[in-house]
Image (cartoon, rainbow, N blue to C red; front, side, top):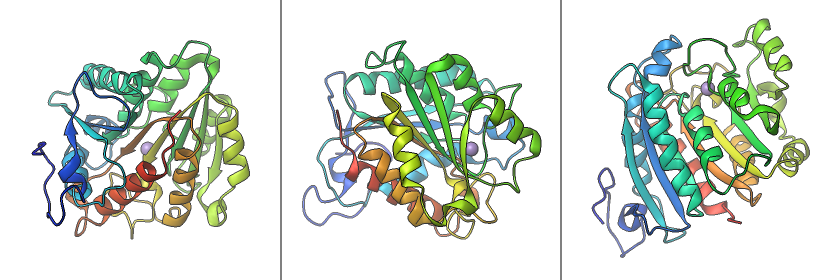
Length: 299
Ligand SMILES: [Mn+2]
């Protein structure tokens, strides 16, 4: 197909993603729509390790050879952020996300620092498929709350989303590290009405609690910060986790969300190829994206 960024081995026709992915057009409907957000300014502002802007191309490279399970994959291209003003880029990215959701596609955002999440959320509520009174659920798989106040950065997106969404948006963070979030951040999470599950509680996935949080909303947005995984599995991130949540648990939660019939939007944040080892983090991220794509039920 020759879509920029996708290349790999060719056995039988159409067997691998790079062979079937098509450029997004105004006529595209349904399926899966990828949009890259090549930005690390949010990470810089949040004092993390720079390099997440190279995330979208590393993800495409690792997704290229995945085995095909459905024929309708589209690429909307990348929003690249060259200046320090990523707020404008977030709006352009949000428009692309809104258009893919309008078309009935599962929008998948490829980060980029976690500031991608505020752009993703804006895209979801801009979409014609959501209305003002709809209940929106955000599920964030992350070692950190990302509910900070102040100048927008990779540490603030969900506080911005909750402020923009008012009372109709619920936020559940899964994988929070007590060692990586100060007491004031826990107090802030409580004040904002956030729910959370700690990393060490995830030796068993609380499927009932998670399922219940899906039942209470009309539309679901799932954000995967790769630093929720142990640093041994995901070394290539802006802020590696000393403990993290097992790949099995993350995979199980993502598949629950994908099968809920409510998932409109999924994004992957904080991949930093400069610190990756043998593409380990990008490969794991690609595998998790593949699982979401395979399990996704549209509605
Ligand atoms: Mn994060």
